[in-house]
Every structure is written in C-alpha cells, then in structure tokens.
Image (tube, rainbow, N blue to C red; front, side):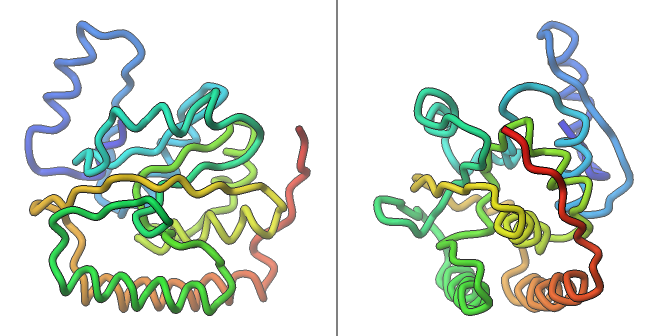
Length: 205
C-alpha cells in the first residue's frame, strides 16, 4: 500500500491491519500524485502478477479473479474497463461522464486504441513491471495513458476486462481541471517519445 501524503488515518489503519495480517507493506511518501504512487508500489511489489487497485474499491473486490489466472494468463496486462461491452457504470455524475468521454475520445484519436485508460484496476505480469515502470515518468493521472503507450510501443499484449464500476462521492478526481491536465500529459508523452526518453527494453517470455 502506498500512502501518497494522505492527511487522514489511512496510514494508521494500514499499520494496525499489518500487525495481524502477513504480507502487507506500507510505503508513506509526500504527495506527488497517482502516477508516482503507482510506480513506487509496482517497483516495490513482488509476485508473478501485480494488481493495481484504487483504495476506494469502486470496482467490487470480488471481481479480482477476472484479472488473475486462470482467466488472465501470460506475460501481458489486463486492464479494467468501464466502457467495454458488458461493463456498467453506476451512480456517475453527468459532468464527470461527459468529460471522461471527451478525454477518451482524444486518447483514441491519438492512437491508444483502448476504451478506458483511466480505470484504476490493472493487473501486470511481474516480468513486465520494470520494463514499464522504470521508464514511466508522469506523476499525475496521465500516467495510465503513458504506461499503456509504453506497453504498445514494446509489444506487450493488453486485454480489456469489462467491469461493474461504482462512483464514489469522495473521489479526488476534479472532472474539468484534471481532464485539461491529462490533455497536457498527452502532449508530454508525445514529446518524451520524440526526444527518445522511452528507451526500448528487452522483451522476454
């Protein structure tokens, strides 16, 4: 669990839980953004498969099995999608839904080709983690697009998993502000690629 500079009791709750459950590790850091938190967590984790999960559990955790063997097998990535056929979005405000659609349209026009890049539930084959996250640079919400851009650039297969997603009113996402910030991140990704900042890793497995 990566605590990205929270000001509530999150760290205390995790520490208490870790005292009687094995395998929980807490990393506390100053606030830098979702992208940085996910990068730190993925690089620190271990295991054949590494699952990225938003703390608010807007996707019910009972859907986790759809991202793991036997449903997901191989050296690739499985990403949750709120827009793929069979997915459902429950309780989402109209403004957030509209801004999300505008952003994803621009992402698709830019060549990403995924129905939903921003869903916070993604599973990575452990063998691919360092090839991606050692090169992922953005600290904000645009990091999701950056990781998927790198996966496509390096020939890593990505499978979309339609999910049931519940809007949480306590979400830190600001629809208008964060949409424009993510659009700026798309430009940064293009610039990074043009400047050769995403070196090609060896692909094994």
